[in-house]
Length: 529
Image (cartoon, rainbow, N blue to C red; front, top):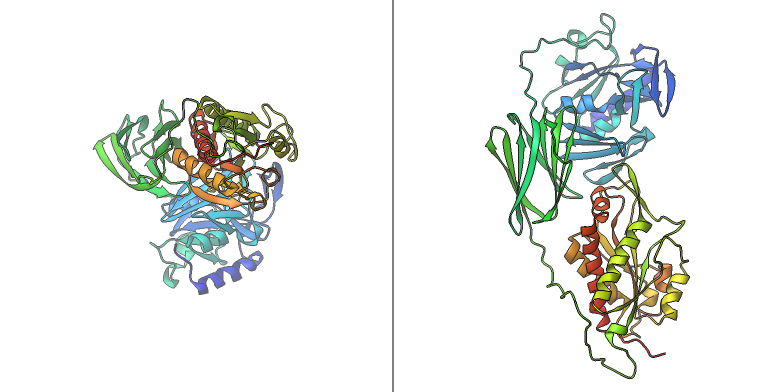
């Protein structure tokens, strides 16, 4: 990522700290933001990007003593892509090798997945002139220091000058008289250039199909009703995905989400803005990809993934096992070793909350659905299962382990969904055990149970390995038997919350948890009452 020079930063900070002294025009107007209408009597600035005067619906203004500028106009002028996700009020900017993610009224941004605080606590805002177009406005200092664009302030002509690597604001071209004058012309009047290019053709994407060409290879074909004359592509991480942008394209009668779940590809997602159509291929363990132009209106994306090296899966037991106890006087057969499953939260405690297509997704519902699937797998295999809750109830954190102790369970497993605020890229699976309950009185340990469960979940789900961890959770530390708490995924991650609402992905998680339990039970010796 490019960085602005130290001397220039000092100049910018000095200028914007004293911006109230600028010779910008005071243009009284009514602005709408934060759910209300506000009278604005401050300065309004011209916006010049790469020596081009822009005429945005809302020019740069002063907000809390800092200059706010329209993000889309700036970035698109320097060749970047801006995407606004309405449901979550999130702004995505793809610029050269950078991926920036910001949220309205939040002073935390993510630069290539790394958390960054926006300076001076000046947050991105949705602002509009009354009756005008709403614009996403961000602090210009944040753009200059984070994205690496050169920013200067012209106090004489009341303009903010921004340029990218392809342009220089040297002394000989800083004179704004040939571009705009605050005294001779309206400050928002653009330079009018007679268009010389023909209106671009608008292709309509009317087909997106895929074909698995191998265990770790897939071909995605994108078809349009007109010539796809141009497209761009790039990759993003956390989670991994291949992105194809087709300028000026629209979406026809195609699904916005295609579930794949083969060859390392989970989903294909489609979206559209005024400027382009986007196809996103969600990938696990991306090895590489290439794009081929098949015909004038058809392109093919070939995606290759890495094979995950995992141990051979334990066989799914379909009949009651016949395991001979190692010590008949102190044990019961594996099939009668009671397994207590605990669906986290419930009742008045929803647990973590996520959002999918604008609708709430509650942890308590996901955990109960997955727990029932684990129970079914174990019972089909001939095991005995008890649940701490079978509906939307809320057993206390004491009642749950107490039930397992009183029922003389062999193992206790609590199922949860993870979350983290302001970090939508956080993802993966982890399993906890309590260090205070890690003895070997039952022939094995809680750590071993947690390890077996995590390994099997990763095998089936292909999620990020966040490891086996220790924590003194109330439900696991109070158990007498080996106990573990599984965090299936992050309800705050857009991809994982979608996956965890699908029956197929829940079944994968359940199969992994069930197999981890079955593997562990072979070593468990339940003390006789």
